[in-house]
Image: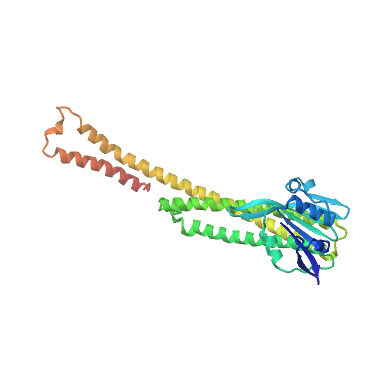
Amino acid sequence: MLKAFKCGDGKLIDVDVATQPETAPDAIWFDLLEPTKEDYAFVTRETGLSLPEEADILEIENSSRLAIDSDVLTVTMPLVSRDAEGLHASACGFVLSPTRLVTIRLATNPVFDHFLEHPHTTGATPSAALFSSLLEAMVDRQADVLENLRTGLDKLSHNIFHHRFAGLKADTTIRGRNTEAALQETLVTLGRDYDTITLLRDSQLGIARIAAYVRISAEWLPATVVSRLHALEKDIASLNEFSTHLTDKVQFLLDTTLGLINIAQNSLIKVLTIVSIVGIPPTLIAGIYGMNFVNIPELHWTYGYAYAWALMLLSAVLPLGWFRAKGWV
């Protein structure tokens, strides 16, 4: 998909280059989403810029992500995309010149969709202003996601320590299918949150590199854009610190959840052990009096049957009393 925009009265105006290709020379921004070869060829012909291919955009080494040729900068970065299966890693490429901006996206991204739905002032150098605005929109979106993650982790922490798993108290035990399901759900949630933070940090690192590289390398950038990129670097640094804090919290809650699972397993094993120990003496007594020997002293007792039952019950109750006195049950 190819979209193009031109500048009018300092604002972006949508240009339908598909039905009106003659308007393409007026466009200052070409946005390519999952582009075809025809889209590549059209934008290259109209702008005269060399566009990175998909393999180039997916490169991870720094030298392949940041390049400059004369006044044209070609930069790529990781991007977070969402589909029906959830979040996943993607990538985006930028080709920035004093007169044109070309963005190449390999997957949909809500930041771009939201950005295109709202008018933006372009300023004296439209391409540079749009570029910095896009980066700022990405950072704002990432900040919102991190804030939502913090809220979710705070709620999860409250459930673990104050509400859902009251079995952490010394005088109770953790058991039951509901608790097991809640622990499994907690593990899945923490894993999903950790994946989200990891994807965001990759994107933040890419934005930080791009902002610093463009600010230093592009001498033609207006002073206003340079200051915006510099402020953006500071914002990303603060987000990185916040991401580190959230990562530590996820790890702490993960360790806690695994500890709760171990407690639940130990509680189950303890119950099974007690049941087996309690059942051994009655079984032994029943086995003794079930032997088929004539010379059994209690065989002809009037109360022999009641005596055997009382002995078996007593042998089961005494260990239970001992365990409770020791605080094991």
